[in-house]
Image (cartoon, rainbow, N blue to C red):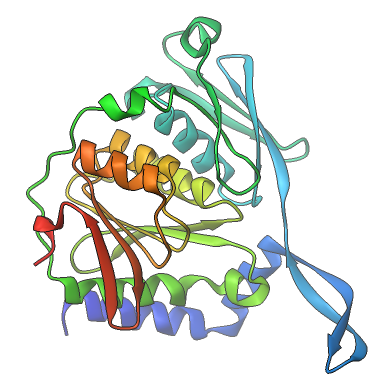
Amino acid sequence: MSRYLAHRYHMCTYFQDRKVAELVVEKGSREIEILRVKNGQGKREMDQVVEESPLTLFFNEQELVTLLCSPRDLKYLAVGFLRSEGLLGSLEELDSVLLDDERNIVFVKTKGQTNLAEKLYGKRTITSGCGKGTVFFHALDSLKSKAVTSNIRVKGEILFPLMRDLQDRSVLFKATGGVHSAALADTEQILVYNEDIGRHNAMDKIVGECLIKGISLSDRILLTSGRLSAEIVLKGAKMGLPLIVSRSAPSSLAVEIADKVGITLVGFLRGKRFNIYTHGERIL
């Protein structure tokens, strides 16, 4: 059995355990009473609704931003957000990451102080992400980003089982229909997985976990269930990710940025088909 198939068998067995699945749903959703209408008839039932909560991020004792997110893996989210926005470069720069669960506040300190007012002046952009996310960059400047270089080459056929694995893991989506999934993979298996109400948050959680655990992003594949927006491609470019794959569509600016910075962008990966929008030389 190949490494990928062995891993996939393990994950399928893992999620077939009902207690584990119920635990995942319990931590990320809330049960409420609804009126379900079908064929003109209404019936009161209990239903699972995904949880959404604010997370306030303090960076070197200065309040930076409040993110609307799924209340899980919040340390990964905070560290990933800072890394994606260029405020944190490496694990060695981190001094501490403290989470206040009761107030939903995370405090991140680095070994060197950062003047946020100077670093972020005029850099705020409202994105097209779920919940109107905030990022700190000039969108036009992003077109001048350093090119992504990678020797990775993949057979198109390996993308299908990877995407199926991404979908299989999202127990919370199956229960609520309210989250996006993201994963980092090599050419055989998913290495890191996470999910959130915002696709950009899900990606930041991946970045944060990789940074904290020392997992390399070089020559990796980013899988996402959500739309390929400019923000997602920019985050990928900053991490040096050469290949971004989604079940959904890209935006025109996402395609333009991916083309300019050297990212292979694949969308509409469904069934037995997909579209390659940029740098198709990496897909065999």
